[in-house]
Image 1 (cartoon, protein in one colour):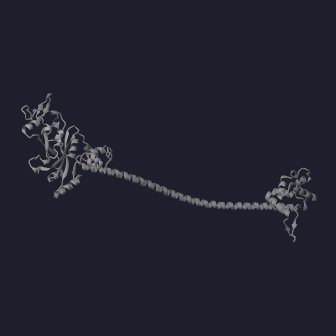
Image 2 (cartoon, rainbow, N blue to C red; image 1 turned 45 degrees about the horizontal axis):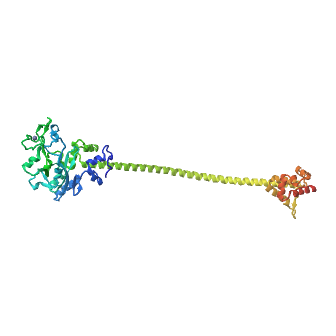
Image 3 (tube, rainbow, N blue to C red; image 1 turned 90 degrees about the horizontal axis):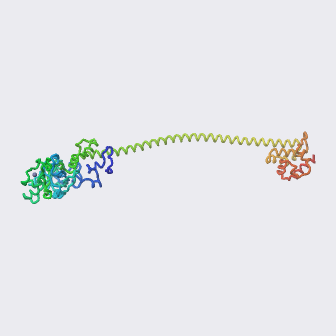
Length: 473
Ligand SMILES: [Zn+2]
């Protein structure tokens, strides 16, 4: 797992990914590791966790062969004035020795392929634990030089010492070129007098305080001209002359602390861990935070979804209930509506029947009136029973097709053949009968014209029939 560079670690204010990357390169995997500082402790090409260290120790104790590659800071040459003012005494090492910056890079690289020893015991092969397989320098923040070495440890004492944390500080051994006394006098100078430390012109001894050129007190250091020396071994030691050596990660951490960065302290504090917590503890805490953050996100998203689904379910239930009630109400309304429609239809039918009966009664009444007034002769069959005459049929047809009023006027216009009771003459008929001249249509009323049309007669024929009826009167 890795975060974007510079991203904030979840749950920890101010603890950025980049900060962790600086101090915990093993926190990262894959492509980022290649841009991170070199692997600090490895066996058979693999980075080591604390558990793996224990496992390797057990293998070692069981008599198995274990090789270990470590990267170390074998020594440090800080940047400092030459000569060194007494006020900066802390920059001097325990031996009051220093290497001149000219040619120092070559000197540092000359340690490659030299033995890794214990206690600078250069006199016995039994003191050799492994070999320096790579040597280079790294510039410190102060502009000084860190002697970086990769060492392959093969002897059990060396491997065991590193795995169980007993070997953790180092010291370098070197030799002056040529190897003679004179060569030594050339290679080693007094840092104040700038002549051979062993020459008669220099009264000093490393660690002495002398008066400098400007009158200020300075500390005498043994100044090795880097071009005149070369590395012959690096040793695991209990008390190194130079502060800040160590297995790469440990010493890098300590160097940062010395420079006042305290980044690791910051990380530990922000993670809520004590100052003496290990890098592994920090990594575990970070992983835990990330997992927790990830779980929190998952579970809160899940619970949101669940509550939404729940709400949707309840809504759905409510809708179903409403819908069911609606359906029920609708069904009831439909039954009522159907009943009402049926009732209405029945009423309409009855009304129509009643109207038809009424119309029929009026027509019957008209026919009866015509008979009573003698305008409609009663026709009888052979048995003497009354039957419908052609004229009665005409009256009924006119009433049905042209309306009762037209039929009524038609009846009034008929000649009274056999008046049964009182004389009944309509003024209209009289007026028609007495009208002379002009065309026939103009002598007929609008209704008489309709009747004429109904009977299939022209206005003249109808008028003639009217006059004929009158004539028979
Ligand atoms: Zn001197």
